[in-house]
Amino acid sequence: MLPFAVLGTTEILLIVFAILLLFGARKLPELARGLGSSVNEFKKGMSEGAKDDKPASTEARSATPPAGPGNGKPHNN
Image (cartoon, rainbow, N blue to C red; front, side, top):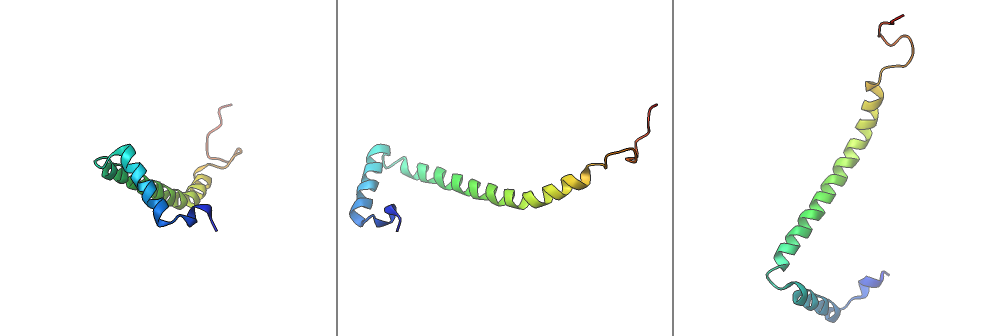
């Protein structure tokens, strides 16, 4: 069992009270919105990164011309 999973009601209320004292009641909704949007952006970035990983690697291979004399470029002798 994880150590933070054993928090009881009293401990949670004390933590919430301490946060209220530190930031004030007016700042809490703004902080929660900022935290929520940050988490959403992080999740969005992670899902886009997972989607882009496979196609990017296959596109990079097909976009590079083959090496050697038969690559279609004229030779300047």
